[in-house]
Image 1 (cartoon, rainbow, N blue to C red):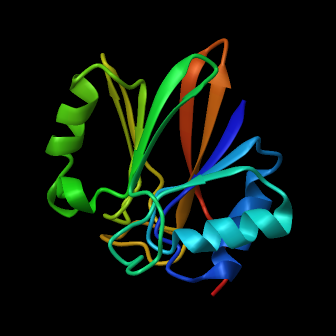
Image 2 (cartoon, rainbow, N blue to C red):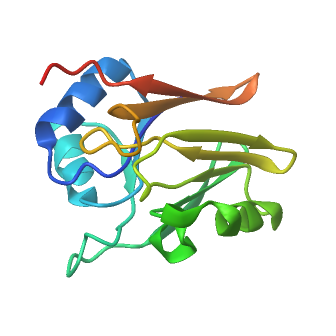
Length: 161
């Protein structure tokens, strides 16, 4: 199974469209908040199944702020990260992963890409396709789930501004 992961699109449909195009064939798109409606609209346009959560910039928009589900026997947790203090570090997210309920924890909010492998599982932040921070580039993630387990990759968006 091939999963595309984005976060923090902030209304930039052009960047999201580019990212989805650069992902190639995906079975699912996960959007970890802040203008999660971007993913909902794009997935309707492209006919892609999506899981999306709301972030701190999704005010007054109905939607879940966390999602948990299973993919090919692996447990996945998605949050934007603002309720876990993700801009100042991922300590609370690490604690969440160490609870042992999840194999893959996906978050956004910091706009900085990250893959952290731990004995309990993997923490993934795809960064932002729209507004990267702290010297990072516009980015998204691909997660392959299959016989080799969970294999995440960060990809720089091929963007010409």
